Structures are given as C-alpha cells and as structure tokens.
Length: 265
Image (cartoon, rainbow, N blue to C red):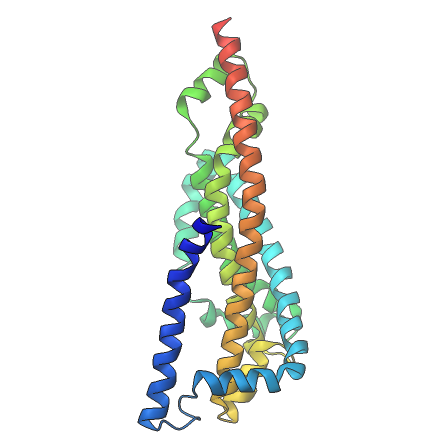
C-alpha cells in the first residue's frame, strides 16, 4: 500500500498544481470562457451535460473496441506471417514503415469517397492506427528469443511449432503488450478521427458540433472523456498483461528446465 501510494502521489500532486495554476490564470487574467474556460467551469459543464454525453461516449466506446479488436488481429496476423516467412519480412517491412509516414487524417477523404459514410471507413481508420504498433512490437519480441534456449530446443528435437509456442511466443509477450498499450491509446484517437469523417453520434461528432457553437468548455469535456477512455483501455491491457506475461514466464521457465534436463541426459 505504501509503495502504491509513493508511486501515485507525485503525478496526482502535479495534476492538481497544474489545474490550480490554470484556474488562477483564467481568473486573474480575465480570459473569456469561449477562449479558455477554467477547470471549474469545465467540471460544471461536464456534470450538467452528463446525460447527453452518455450516448455519444458509448457510441465512441463501441467503435473503439471494434476497431481495436480488428486492428490488433491484423497486426498480430501480419507479424506472425512476416516472422514465419523471412523473405516476406525483408520485402514488406520497408513498405510497412513507409506506410506510417502517411498521416491518417489525410486518408480520411479518400476513405469517405471509396467507402461512404458508414461504419467501414471508421473501422479502417482505427485499424490503420492500431495495426502498426502491434505488428512492430510483436515482430521485435519474436526476434529476440533466447539464442541459447533456441539451440537447446533444436538439440532436443523440438519442431517449429513447439519452438514458437514454448519459446518465441512467451518471450514476445512483454514486447507485444507494449505495442498493445500504444494501440489502445491510438484506437480512441482513431475512433474520434473516424467520427470526424462522417457520423451522427460519438464524441468526435459532439466535438464538431460544439466547435461550431464556440462552446470551448464542452470541447474540453470531450477531450477529458477521450483521455478517460484511453486510460481505461490502457488499464485493461495492463491487467491482461499481468496475467498473460506471468503465464509466459512460467511456461518458458518450465520448458527451459525441461529442455536442459533433456540435453543433460
């Protein structure tokens, strides 16, 4: 408990100091609320507008989860394919990196032209922002397996599938989850960008409406919801990581001991 509190209180104090300085600056400098609302004004607007925001938040959350699941699946499938087929990795990896130099927001008009205003272009946007960190992190993790254990397994007669499931995959889990945490954050951003393309609900749609009405306080409320959704996504990934990485370590350690025993015999 003490260790938890020691790791939590510094960022909490930093955030409170930042909000306090923001509040004082708005009051002392007399800044108009449509330019920069105070934190107290934003909180008041969040409470009063909460009933109307629930539907928008749930729409964005559903879109985020759908896009994140698809983007993660695409990223993992691509990483496995490139890992298992080395010549394909050599051929496609540069294209994979180059593709990330194209801003996702710049592709939005093309996606709208090709796929209309339905759900598909929004899912594609989220997939585009999610698959790259997952694919790169998984590839990096799969390529960093313990060389000594790899040799042990080969000497013990392990097949390709056994090597992959017992050594490479458990070793890759920490790196994979690093990519998933990044993708989880990007997925919320991708959902909001997708709603900017064309939608009649969601936090992105809500932001566009409030921007047109110069309701800066409501735009800040939308930003706060986006941050909250991102934190929830990252928290869920972290919880899953604790369980699976522990399994990966146990699985790998058990197999390490087994392989050493076989080799020593």
